[in-house]
Image 1 (cartoon, rainbow, N blue to C red):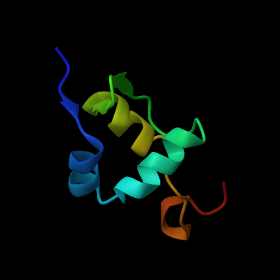
Image 2 (cartoon, rainbow, N blue to C red):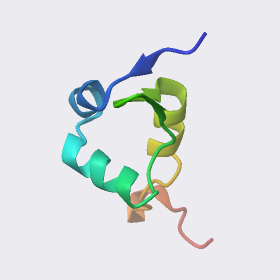
Image 3 (cartoon, rainbow, N blue to C red):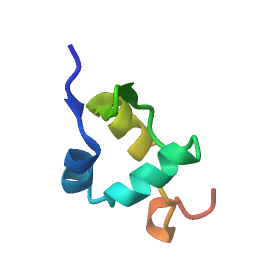
Image 4 (cartoon, helix red, strand yellow):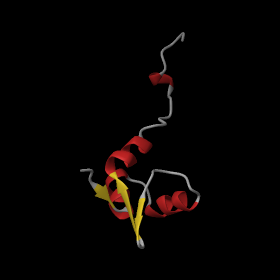
Length: 66
């Protein structure tokens, strides 16, 4: 069974503003979520997959010459 978190818990745990999460949901972007009545929940595995799926490449993270 997967653990779920609310937008408030996600904001606190991962440092993403809950307003940003609301905007992403409104734009049909961001992590997959469940909506039960008025309550929004994220599966932690889905949220983390989304969060870590597009890291920003830095000079130090790219091998020189490739």
